[in-house]
Length: 444
Image 1 (tube, helix red, strand yellow):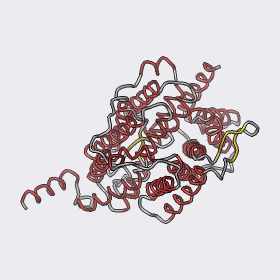
Image 2: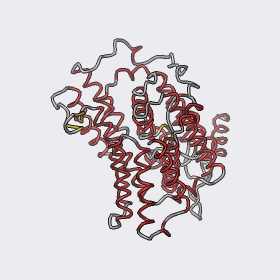
Image 3: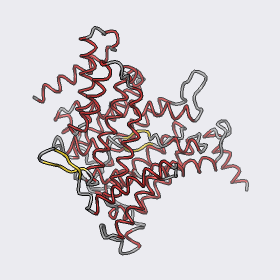
Image 4: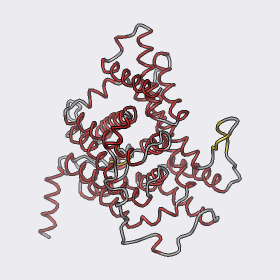
C-alpha cells in the first residue's frame, strides 16, 4: 500500500498531476482514446512506404519504434499530452514524389528526411523556428495544408481503384463492379459515418471491418493460424535501420525536397502544438505554452530518429485533441500512449492481410479533414487567392508537394511585387522564393 502511494506521489510530482487538475486514471483513459484515434497510422504508413520499395515488416517496426521513442520523449521531457509520429502527407510525399516521382532510392529519401530533421532541430534550439513560421503568410500556410489534403485524398482514391489512369483524359472513374473498388467505396462511406458519429477509433474500426468483408468475399486472404495475427516474435527493423544515405541526398542537391519536409514539419508541428495546448488550458497568462522549445526540439529529434529506423518525417497529430477532450493534461498521457503503441508490435503479422481497399478510404477522409484550412484563405484578394489556388492544385496534378509549395511561394512573392504591395512581404519570403527559383533553374 505504501509503495502504491509512493508511486502515485512520484508521478504527481514529476508530471504535475494535481497542478493540472488530472489523475493517473484520467491520463490513461485519455491515452487510450488518442491511441484508438490515431492507431490507423501503424497500418497505413508501412503500406505507403512499402510502395517506395521498403520492406513492409521493417517499415512497420520502424514506424512503431519511432512513435514510441518520440512520444515517450515528449511526455518525459516536455511533459505535454502529445502523441507524435510519421505525418500523413509527408509519407505520401516521400513515396510518390521523392522516390517514385524523382527516381531516388528510398535510402536517399531517408537521408533527406534526416537532413530536414536536423534543420528543424537547429531552428528549434536557436528559437528561429517561430520566426520562420511567422514569416510565412497565413494564406500559404492554409493552402499548403489543404493542398496536401487534396494530394493525400487523390492517392487514396487511386489506391482504392476509384480513380484510374486513362490515356485520353489522364484520369477516369475506375470499374465500380470491381470487388476492390466497391469495397473501397463502402469503406469510404463507413469511415465517414463512424467519424461523423464521433465513434472513438472510427478510422481503425473501418479498416478492420472492410478487411473482414474483403476476406469474406474472397478479395484478400484469410489468416491461417493465430500466428498470422499475434506473435511474440517482434518484427525486425534490421533491413531499414541505419540505411539512410545522407551523402547521396546532399549530392543530389534536393533543396526543394528538404525544404518541403522541413517547412511542413515546422509550421504543422508549431501550429498544432499551439492549438492543442490552448485546448488543454496549458498556456500561461501571456498565452505561452510551457516547454514549447522542448516540444519543437522533440519533433525535430523524432524526425531524425524516424529516418534512422526507416520511417518518414514526424509531426504532431491533431487527433491528440480527442485525448485532451477526455482530460489528458500531462506527459503521463504521452507515456501511456507510447506503451500502447509498443504493444502493437505483438500484432504486426496482421498487416499483411489488410488490403488497399481498407486503408485507401482513410487517406480520403484524412484529406477531407485537411481541407478545412480553406476557410483561412482570403477569396476576395486575387494576390492571395491565386497563389493559394496554384499551391493546392499543383500538388495533386504534379504529384508533388514540393512543386506545389514552390508554385505557391513564387507566385505569392511575384504577385505582391508586381501589384506594388511589397510591404506585405516578409524579408524571408525573398530568400525562400529565390531559393525555389534557383532550384527550378538547376532542373532545366
